Image (cartoon, rainbow, N blue to C red; front, top):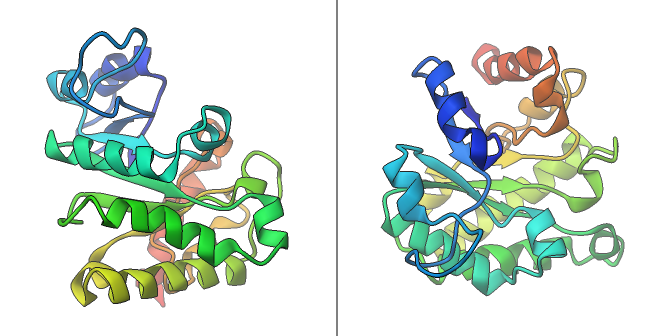
Length: 215
């Protein structure tokens, strides 16, 4: 389990959690620290002993206009500094309705693959933008379809080993009620949980990781 609080609480949360719960920042800067007021560098996270960072979250792509290339650069730099990365990909409602979901997530993943050779410290998070905080959830079949296609893309464009070992997690209105069915999908390797992580049902979502073990 990796918990990702706002940056000002990273050290406090890390000090309160038991060691098998890891901590992630929600973002970091794209290159070496310098005069970038308000940004948090990868080096700062390393100094704070924060092992993980989330990059390319849809809100940053959409609201702050982070391009695929910018996110790819961020992922590569964070990895170069020793951080582990949860790299987010996903389509808007307009893109899904136009039938371009797979093209969109492939382009987002390609921008990372072009800059990264070692995927050992990358987790891919598929987060359909239309399902984030809206109460709408991709059906298990929709989630599995995209996860399967992402894994197939990795196999064709990186290696069979990367495709087999890279965790692809789902994010988008995950709840205690739907997590077991989603977790049972063969290519869903976990969840990126938003609002539900602040509720007691978060325990049920964590426990859904046991579903595949019992199949």
